[in-house]
Image (cartoon, rainbow, N blue to C red; front, side):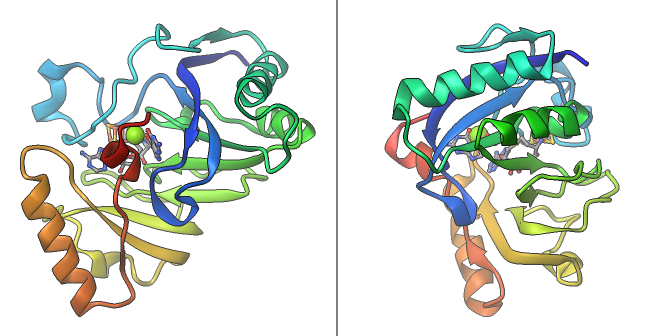
Length: 213
Ligand SMILES: C[S@@+](CC[C@H](N)C(=O)[O-])C[C@H]1O[C@@H](n2cnc3c(N)ncnc32)[C@H](O)[C@@H]1O
Ligand SMILES: Nc1nc2[nH]cc(C(=O)O)c2c(=O)[nH]1
Ligand code: SF4
Ligand SMILES: [Mg+2]
């Protein structure tokens, strides 16, 4: 199996319960809910994406022929930032990472002493061995991954009221204000929802607030 990676970089996890944690982000190319082309956005299943995941031309991106080659690049990215420090953590995202992430790659990064996190839209089951599963549901799609560590709902999405997900098996339930031209009013609406429904907590995209990747 080969892997198409848009970009790879070290930064702090900006969202959810692992906010602030030193991480390597491995952003796979491609998604099943949007082509990534602006001319297709309005008719896509997922219309509010804040990410360029097309191609393999980003910083640290490329085509990796084997899981070992990709795991070596992830370890090199960690080492360049944190040297030999432990608490190694890799976040597989995208695009939709579960179109490419497989047990061979998970085994290879585990072998290199990484904890493994995934950011997924929930339309594909996570392979065995992922240590931290974050599901972020989108409209016009079937959510099959209904358990994990955190459910992070971009808010508001009129087709997806938070109540829909309360029977799912997650440790944490987050509302993340939808970024875009209405970010301020979306943030206010998320605050009000969390105040009325204390099961839900506010997840801010803190990396955007402080200007890191
Ligand atoms: C770019 S997605 C990639 C992973 C996966 N495809 C997914 O949707 O979960 C990473 C995270 O950013 C969130 N996100 C995308 N666009 C956003 C926006 N405009 N405002 C807030 N969060 C957004 C997603 O919901 C997801 O939690
Ligand atoms: N710092 C930082 N944290 C993140 N958490 C989830 C992200 C993503 O795009 O999946 C992301 C990202 O792009 N940057
Ligand atoms: S599912 Fe994720 S990567 Fe795909 S378009 Fe939506 S937010 Fe972007
Ligand atoms: Mg992002």
